[in-house]
Image 1 (spheres, helix red, strand yellow):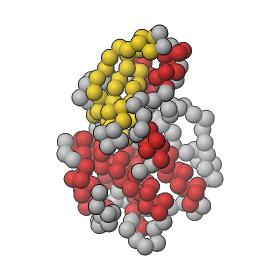
Image 2 (cartoon, one colour; image 1 turned 135 degrees about the vertical axis):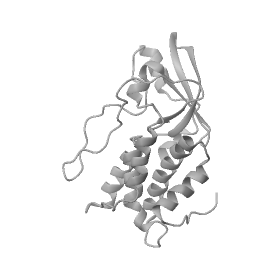
Image 3 (tube, rainbow, N blue to C red; image 1 turned 180 degrees about the vertical axis):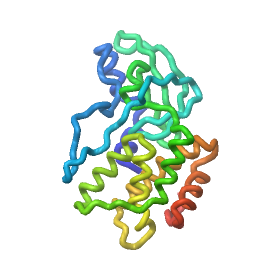
Length: 222
């Protein structure tokens, strides 16, 4: 999957917690919630992480979405002392990566942490998969950067756009390795959230997505 996720998978938590403890009010996420706007070659801004409209309350057992890591599960919320400061931390586990992420409750919103999308919003994302691909006439390197940003935005609609735009070559000989990687990363993000919403497993969710896309799953087993 994505290099960023692979690197994070080896960590028990993120360094941002230590920074939060040292300053008592430092940034609590490896993804800036409001980075300086970036623009593509056409002058249009690239997608950024969008914080929820209002703060959400999380509880143990909740399935949540963290922008750069996808769907995880809240294991517990507890007050811990770090570097002499007491912080209320949300412990989120990502089973596939065997990773635990700790996010201070006070910074959850700015970090982009959110609950699962509503069924209405996700249905919009699924409907988008049936639309016509919109491919920009720009270099692949620039388009790949935009696709990566959309996947890491945590927005199911943005992720669905990536799947829609790259599905035309899915499983075809002319599909590049990087294109296939990005396509599968976006598809994996959608499948994980769909599985959580449907209370099923990822293979079932993937089968549903491939049926909507009307393509065959050509990925190697495992």
